[in-house]
Length: 315
Length: 102
Image 1: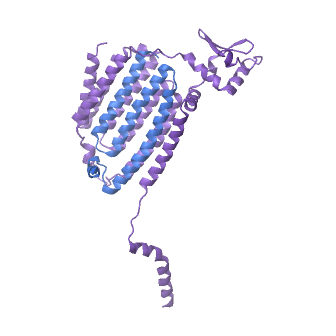
Image 2 (image 1 turned 45 degrees about the horizontal axis):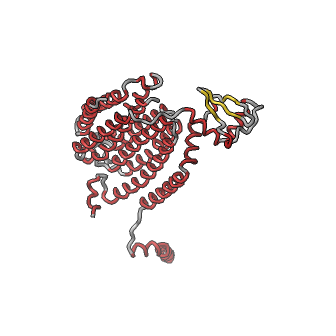
Image 3 (image 1 turned 60 degrees about the horizontal axis):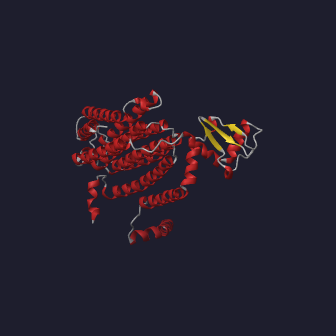
């Protein structure tokens, strides 16, 4: 595939991003972001060929909508003068990413992303932004701090970004011809063998006369495929076709993969979160420096007060 | 999911990564710089989930769980540091902390 047009799209995107980063009126910035998003959409279109890459047209349309929404919101994020609005645009990016995850049939991750990112991490950002908000004047036109208005070396940064984008585009175009063969959907069935209780109850619901347990693994695989059909072989050689509803759900698959393939990483993640909690608590604690005089006055404060009280009572 | 659809997802994730990188280099507000690192995490997460979906390998989604963990830990620690720095010098300008170099 010729890489000339994709690189032109990358260049257009980088130029629009560069112009949008410079201080300019709002409408001009929005126009530049629109041009940049259009260039990004053109690039995606060039790489994908057509929407027929998706199973149906609505899926392709949603992909375009969500991805353009994420790209435009993230461009606005890095060009906005006010940090609070940047954080709100990041919520939009997170929601669009969750939409892309839904298209990728990763429901659990989509909702976990919204809950953890939009619900927890962004709230932390908003709290810190409000803690450190200096513009307390009540004037109508609050002037943002100069470090929020004037970018640092936009030309160099966009140049680096352009080179990285060209590298990613070239790698994706080159690599798409030598991808490994796509995994088969039927490989998802094997997880079911690892969930014996649920497996048994659902098979018994289907056919109560089925001789449980299925064929032991020493004699071969219990769950087999023949064309589109998936069936289970009992220890007596009897077969039972499994309906599609019995296929393990996304959440079950992720949970099984999490505890079966990455048990040590799971424990480490817990330790990292605990350490981060300790670290944040220790770092953000306000240490009060006290001189000797103040310490004494705090320690002896109650006693001196009582002395004064008694003295007042005597007089 | 065809390989060209996978390429589309990878380009979207690359674009988010590049925008996050440019934002991290360009912005001078410490909090927005950390927001841009979160943007880069999003790009990586999309790539993980898309490739996992293509190969029907659920390790990709498990990696996103770990990305969420690292992002949460990073947000907690980095924002605690930002609060500390803001108390010392009363500004969020990353250039103002050049004296920390020594």
